[in-house]
Image (cartoon, rainbow, N blue to C red; front, side, top):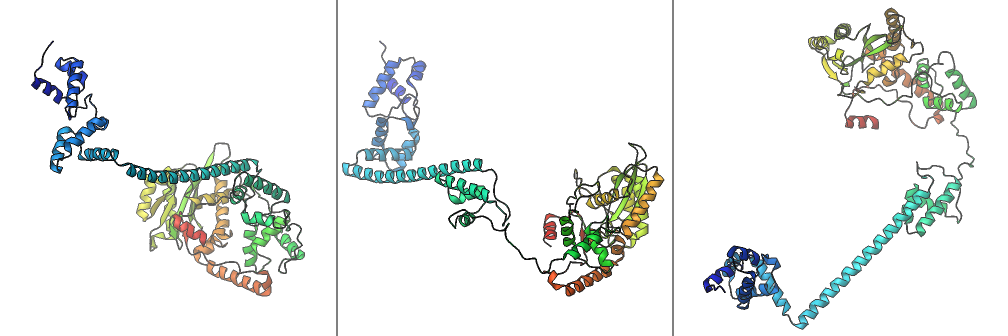
Length: 517
């Protein structure tokens, strides 16, 4: 049997104690000593009071005996000595303090332990009550959710809508039954009413008389308003709207024309209402229902400040053959300031049209530079077109990339052009016929058409400043009509005030302000 010196044994045991904490198996392979011998040496060292955790355990995994041994070793040490000891053993002073507190607590008196248990029991009781209360609340919430889901499935349709809506008696009865079932299943009444789109106050009103009440409005006898139109006056309005001069016009075009002739029959909204009653207010023509157009990007408070332009196809004599209409429009007055028709889309044609329009309108003498807005087509961005704009001092403005509705004024006039009653939608015979028709259209549009965007005056009147006198005359006619029949006016007369600013693609704040106005 091999014998080892005491110094050698101590050197091996030093590798088992902190901070090394080497495993017995590792030392056995490294030192060539059997594991049983090493376990015997470690056991003997522990009996002598040394801290020998062994097996590579961290300080948190040490046994209670090892921790207690550390507490005994450090009991008489000051802070500096304790710090030195902890560094040599791979420990933290906080760990030693924690182990010391555990030892002291383990040796506490029975009275202290009993007191601590009572405090802990009270805390546990409070926590249990809180958890039970939370559990009951969640059970109620779960029951309410299940009841509301069942209610939502059973309801045929929500009863919600605008204030004052008419709800049939059968739907009222069904709603009350479903709400009562949901409340009995654990749902709150207000939440059940919200699912059906009614308020709790509405449900209370339905059940106030004991039985479910019915809506009395359908059977109510209402007196005829004293300021309503008579049957003869309504028939006169219909006869006027169906007259040959106004047969193709909506009330929005008829009203300003009558005002220009010194005639007032009723308001524009009354005309629409009368047509609805007579079942004559239907969509006509090949066009679809109008859609809201986006507002503008630049501000124009006078003519020749902001123009927009575009190119559109005109049908030719055969399928696939087209003529190209180049058209420029002043957004302030809506006047067509220039147009041409060609067989091709070229920047040279566009630059020549711009030069002619600027010479005709004398834009060079304007105090502010002209802004010309268009989309991103090749004729709009061709080198010859851009060079012409630069030479004339015209500021370019283009649509946003991949946005097709930034040039609303140009698209709008093309729609007006192509949905005229006499528009040859089956095709022009040749370019000469196309130019003759567009010439007539431009003359009608600039001098006869009352544009809704500029208070129903013609673009020529707006462009030359004559619209102020026309609008003032209309205001006087409406004020005179109100004096003759004041009972027919619940507020002010129709607003014929002049639109001072026109915007092209305004920002969100400006758009909200315009809608509010």
